Every structure is written in C-alpha cells, then in structure tokens.
Amino acid sequence: MELLTIGEVAARSGLAPSALRYYEAEGLVTAERTAGGARRYPRSVLRRLAFVRAAQNVGLSLPEIREALASLPEGRTPSARDWERLSRGWRDRLDEQIAALVQLRDGLSSCIGCGCLSLTSCGLSNPGDAAAAEGPGARRLSPVLRRLPPAGRAGSPAAPRGPAPGRR
Amino acid sequence: MELLTIGEVAARSGLAPSALRYYEAEGLVTAERTAGGARRYPRSVLRRLAFVRAAQNVGLSLPEIREALASLPEGRTPSARDWERLSRGWRDRLDEQIAALVQLRDGLSSCIGCGCLSLTSCGLSNPGDAAAAEGPGARRLSPVLRRLPPAGRAGSPAAPRGPAPGRR
DNA sequence: CCTTGACCTCAAGTCGACTTCACATCGCAG
DNA sequence: CTGCGATGTGAAGTCGACTTGAGGTCAAGG
Image (cartoon, rainbow over all chains, first blue to last red; front, top):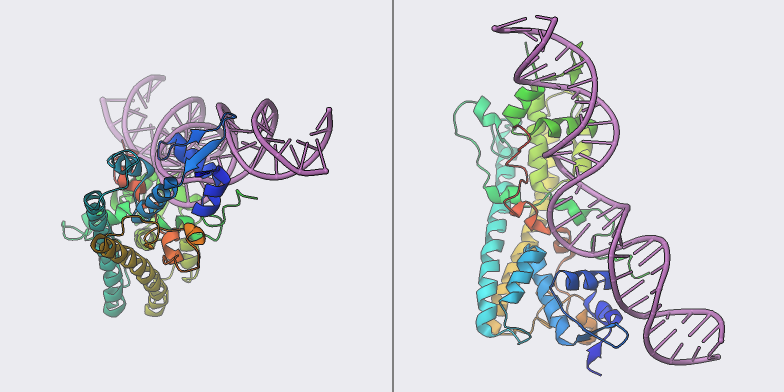
C-alpha cells in the first residue's frame, strides 16, 4: 500500500537499485522486508534520498552523510532547527570551495594579463619550487583546493551517475 | 650539471618520485637516462610540472592535461598565445564550476529561509521524484554539479597528496 | 670488498561510490 | 507446472591518480 518496491524507489529517485542496496549496507537507509525477503520502503525514503543527494552535491562523503542523518531523530521529519543546523555547515563548506575556485580563477586571469608564462613564480601552481625559488613567499593556494577535485571524475562522458547503465 | 635527478625534482616539485615515474608512463613528462638507467630531468620539467598542477587544480584529468601539453610545441617555452588559449578554456571551466556551487549555495540559503524542509520539492536535491511530484518543474541543478566532486576525496586526513609518505 | 642509499621495474594495492556478475528465489500469469 | 521478471545475496570489478612492495642495479664511501 504505502510501501514501495526497490524498483519503484529506483525509478523515483533516479538511483540504481544497486545503489539503494549499497546505501542500505552503508546504513544510510533502512527497509522493511516482505516474507520473501524483498525490500519495502516507506515513502519517506525518497526524502531521505533527496537529502543524501543534496549532501553529496555539497561534497559530503557517505560516512559524513550517515552521521548527519543520524543526528536527525529517527524517522521524524527534520525540524526547522535540524535543517538550519545542517545546512549552515554545508553553506560554510560551499563558501570555502567557492572562494578557493574564485581565487584560482583570478590567479589565472592575472596571469593572462601579466604575461608571466613561466608558471614557476606565479602562484597558480607553484607547489614546492618555492623552496628552490628561495624564500617562503609563494604557496598562495589555500589547502581547500588540494582537497577539492581531481574533479573531472564524472567529467568524462562515461557513466558517472547519470547513465546508470545498471537498469538495463 | 643542468640535469636533475628524480629525487631533486621530487623535492622541488613537491611530488613523490613515484608520481614522477607515473607521469612519465602517462606521457606527461619525459626524461633522459644515464648509462645506468637513472632519470635525468632538464630544469624545464619543473615548469611542466607546475603546469600540470595548475591544470589539476582547475579540474583537468591527466589525459586532458597530456593533450594540452601536446599542443605546446615540443620543449619550447609556451608563448603568450599558447598560454592565453589554454587558460581561457580553464577560466570557462572554473566559471562553470563556481556558478554551479553558487547556485547550490543560494538554493541552500533560500531553503533555510523558506522553511520547505521536505526537500522533496525544493530543487536542492530533487533528482527524479519530480516525476512523482508531477510535472517537469523541478530538476534545477545544472549537470555540471553532477560532474563536480564527490569532492571530499582528499578531505579525509589520510594522504591525498600532501602527506606523500612516499618519500620516507 | 661490502654496505649504503638512491634509483630501477613491474605488479599489485588503495580509496570512494557504486556497478557487474553469477547464481538462487519469490510471486504470478498462462 | 512452467516460465518470466523482479528481487535477493556475496564477491569481484571499475575508474583515476597514485602508492606500496618485492626484488634487482649502480655509484660512491669506508
């Protein structure tokens, strides 16, 4: 009645069934079982999955998301306070990431203008050769950048999350 | 004389020797060899590595970087035109990423204000349940976001690139 | 001559978030 | 009863960018 099969949840959430099982194994969601062992999800799981997605977009890892979810009293619809608390942290995270990218972009722009093609002394990259270049002057990039990507990850057209060739 | 050992390059670039070998295998850098087979790098490799770093920060994958490097006439110091061409593309990339993050952050902020805790209809996440919620109205997130992180990657204290326990 | 230490190669391991595979079951229509 | 499709499980594979490990070589120093 009010319970959804894994296939339905997959269709509605856009996640592959395998991902849902994985999330369950990781403790992000739970499901009841039929006599036969099939998963039956309450409608609220969709909200939970939406939450997971949002958190992923902010850059949280699954363990972090699990923690965040754990801080929401079981099953209950998150209160305004819950939501505010969580999203405030996320906002800070996003602000950090944005600031780092902006800084990088601006460094790039100024490099175009200044003609310092060497890259050896222009802070855009410049990791350790600062030591060779003498003096601790360089090293302008905030560490958050190092934490950021290898971003292209899903960049290649090949199946990041969208394609989900799983449901064939 | 003017040639650096892998250890020196590692120290000056901040990369582990293993990473340098890997880059060579991937065709990002080349090195001469001594009679005994040891790598000897010209000073210019540092510039090249700085370039690689910068490109990584922008979010390029190694294959993409290899391509970019290939477009720089062999060995020659990149001209102003080269640099401008490349960095313009990077800038666009960064702009995209920044825009996506800003959009996400602002969505977050507006959610705090609007009290729509359900997450089911607020575009912050909302992947496929739009179908369930009837109508194609949702799905506000630009696809660039999906390409972005799972960012936390290096987030865990455990050795992303900094620690480089390689040089022990 | 022997030991270090820096270097070499090739193979395999790591991390995160899943997917894919092989094989077993459930429930139901025909 | 048979067959199909949706599901179940556990194990192993995938991708990117490296690191780690095992086992071997080279040049210099005591």
